[in-house]
Amino acid sequence: MHSSYQNLLLFPNHNNSSNITNNSNKRLAFCGIPKNGITSWIQLLRFIIGAPDYRSIPYQKQDWKKFRFEELEGHVQSDILNNDNYVFVAFLRDPAERLLSLYLDKVNGTDKRWKSHFVSRYGLDATPTFAEFVRLIAKERHSCPFHGRNSERLFGVDWCTDPHWAPQTLKCGLSEFLPRFQFIGSLERIGHQSKKILQHVGLWESYGRYYHKDSTSMSEAGAPTDLRNSCVVPPPRLWIGDKLSGFQQQGRHNIMKKEKKMEESIKFSHHSTQSQSKLDMYYTEELLDTVKILYANDYKIWNLIKDEEELIWNLIKDEEELVSGSELAMKLSPMCRENAT
Image 1 (cartoon, rainbow, N blue to C red):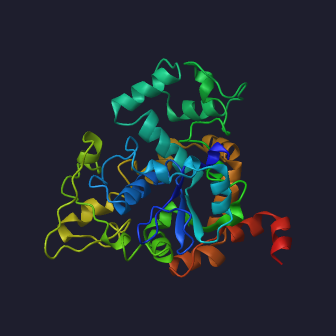
Image 2 (tube, rainbow, N blue to C red; image 1 turned 180 degrees about the vertical axis):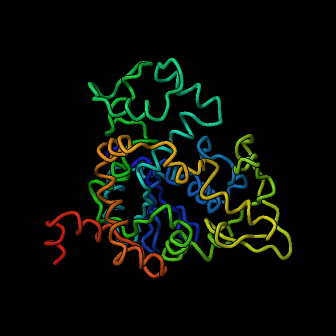
């Protein structure tokens, strides 16, 4: 199975069953796209399987990795792709905002280790400006994969691109099986959409509503200091009278009034860069046009979600429905429309 499935996570059902081919319940197959809130969903997965340090940075933990689609035998993968009990879900993001978020987080962020790693890995003399970074990835690629510490590794936006800025549509089979995705969400509406998805697969009442993040250790920069500096984070403290906000609900239902301002400043995870508010600061019209060309396929889907306001956004705002891959596929392809009729 293609490596694009490497971030497809298969969540246990509400009985916390480890049998991922059990057909008795709806099961969540979540497409974890880097820079689209994937860390929070892995933390939720670890919360569901009982990890006491579920709030810590998860990537070096081993307990959740057995739930990755790529770990399964080919015949099991095929069974899951054809099993209607699996609810395939993906969250998309404005491609320009996502690319800027990547730059502000991994290329030119506050963590000097990441900045040094990026410069060293790609054989650069110094950290590139955002405009320089965009011009580098816009260059034509001559080989794939490319080895060695050389800036040519940055060239091109395709299957070989670093997953943090590779096209969203090349993840989890979105480019091949878009109609298979029952829900296509937006990072802009992740709060109520996450809740609705977890309700649909039976994970909200059993786990999602109990997901709790203690905000007492938040730094002034708007990120949990314990997530940055600790490999083991204890479960949050719960007090009588505390209101459980639930997974991804911190911005909607604040646990305590005195935490309201701090909660609202944290949109998604410890990677948050507030890139949406910085778009005008970093993008020129020319740079934005370049990004629209590089991520043309991502924009085809993203623009459908944004442009079909009456048919799509109004439904989302009313919290009644979520956009499905089939809806998007029918709008993108006449062939899909013919097959659906």
